[in-house]
Length: 311
Image (cartoon, rainbow, N blue to C red; front, side, top):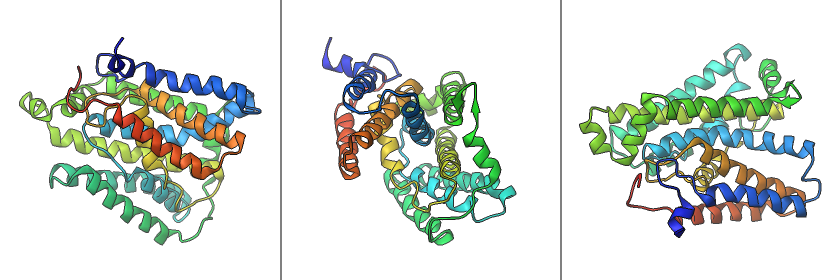
């Protein structure tokens, strides 16, 4: 088996032995080296810690499959956190969703209609939205609506709410990308947008929709994370832009577009979650964790093919 086959199996999933093996190796390693890792309580903590990242990464995957990238999704999370404690509780969720819709539309229109490079467009959005979040909520605090807290603190059949948030998001994204015409079309757009257009696909609308869905993922993550800590933090999502890109790259999603899968995103997200949890248990500095995340992203992107899509 060649190195390329180990990295990525043939087809559009992007999965390979590397993507599937990293979380398994990390799990086994931490089981032997990290104290209190193999406990039910710690597994629940890992689930809660990765839930927000998974929500963001699933949206990031949709954009990446279509041939784009969204660095602003972390700032959408921060803005959501600021909004839900600054408006009437009954309007918190609608206001956050409306903000996510506007951000997705602006990013999508900027990239498709005005031909701004996705990195530049979403970097500008990221900076603007982070400043807006700090303008709305200069300091951490505020009261998260009680109904949101109830949605992230319940248990059912002995499993925490975070598990059900993850399952619902995974199933919804899998159905959307694997069992609908929309999913088929975004893979076609990411693989070759010119050919997709010649076959009747509205490339502009597909890509705008992808950016909107990615922003909605950031909103959901902001709702979950704010309710989980029962407070708002205007810089809560700063690290999620980079981490979501790292998670999908580790999971075999091709950043050039056309290749990716929900199982791959799960694998990449779990790998990052296990790394964070293990470092916390061992007592490693969070600065080293940030450096390790950057190295993982560089390694994952370096191993990706840049010319052949879907081969």
